[in-house]
Length: 84
Image: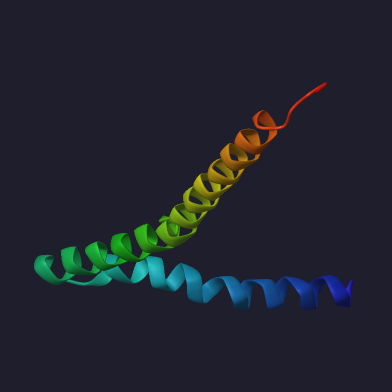
């Protein structure tokens, strides 16, 4: 029972800062400041969810290189005399 209580308390402590970050905009009285806070949060979430473009371009580059290598292999295979 003690272990469960300690685990629950530790969980509540670790979750509290994340919840406070999301909820702190609601308590800002000035409308402009509150909207700016929401915009910052939205931008931060979008940045976290945005995929890395470098890895995508790297994958495309690797596929193009593989196609070039395959074409070179096919050309060399076609040049071999079969059954001469």
